[in-house]
Image (tube, rainbow, N blue to C red; front, side):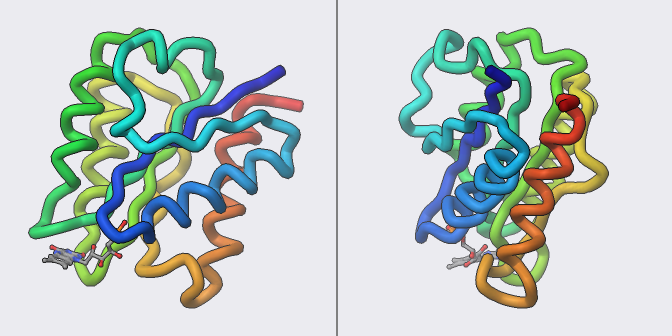
Length: 145
Ligand SMILES: Cc1cc2nc3c(=O)[nH]c(=O)nc-3n(C[C@H](O)[C@H](O)[C@H](O)COP(=O)(O)O)c2cc1C
């Protein structure tokens, strides 16, 4: 079965909620998805066996959370070139974290990324639920029928 990993960092839970909705969108497309806090990803083995990878962090002080930075150094050790990917994050006004994760996945890991990072203030605002689900569908579409 086609499998995806949604890995997130969060402080107050908003980014986790967005990640759950992105996963839901992928599941609508028949993909099995694990949604995991980066705190629970300890080694390269935890990253093996997925066809798509979607990473998320909120923005604090113009930056992603430290847990996501540390996680990305772990991901660097795994060969993800050409794998489907996406990045997301909750934000208040500037939202740099999702963009930086997205650019790292694209430029350093060489992944086949979604059109844009998904940046939402709150999943329940302004059509956020559908936007997050659609983001999941967009990444799922890269994996074929
Ligand atoms: C101390 C503090 C600093 C923040 N800095 C930023 C920032 O630089 N840019 C931004 O867009 N949002 C900023 N925010 C807003 C958070 O990104 C927002 O509350 C987000 O929903 C938190 O997501 P989380 O629940 O996943 O931790 C900040 C919030 C706090 C409390």
